[in-house]
Image (cartoon, rainbow, N blue to C red; front, side):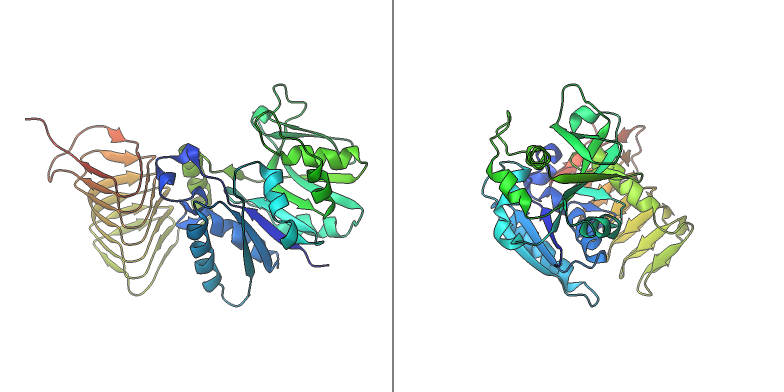
Length: 372
């Protein structure tokens, strides 16, 4: 039986506001690629060609448009995506229950749509499918603050014997990292759930129900990186780590890119149609298509979206979404996250000591006015 995938992309991203007033958190870019596209690529790389995407009514149109764009960019593989509305945020188990008709009797992998992880899904899927009596498989990672997560307790055979959601006192340091493998028995376990203290149907309670019914639930521990992009600093950290995986000491750009008195150090990617004049770029950096940069010091660990216009500014360790304009900003910009079409307008020739760390929603406008 073929395995399907389920992406949970219904979260509203309240911890990334004000940016997520206008854009779903799953579509915020990391290294100029929406987080959701990173997750879709992970699934497609495992050969899965049927994906269900859980959405909420407020952001479903944006999610569907973005997924369609991802599908069009696939070189050859055809992946069918089905969109499933979760009318209210009633928990991860509730989200899974809404996908019952899509899943039918297939085994499936469930992935949170706002997490990034460097793992091969095939390394998780193959042993799960090879053991039909196994009803669930979890990916775990040792963390420093397990009380912030769902926590698992294992026996000596990597069998899960207990799960607790955000315990006050954690019985282990093994956190669930947002990738789960299930068989259809999970739906019966969800049917017997009662809402938790926070009013949600918890996926940890559903899995515990499988364990209590003597079903086999195993786990694998992950040694690589895992990034929850729910907050600004987390997203900037994710951007930094993904950019670090660019080939070292290399520059990639199309013939249509114009470089005039510009130096490129370390890993730099530049989209087609962009022009750079009198700039110093310290990678790893990604610059989108049709950008115009002049007298700019950029990087490291910075992603610039398409159609940006930057002049006389210094930017480091930041994520800038498409359509941004920054001109003559007199202080360095560091650790910043800016939405679409943000404008920062300074004063020509003015330089001020210090730095700005900003989180700006779409269409924000900041003007520098020097006191008289």
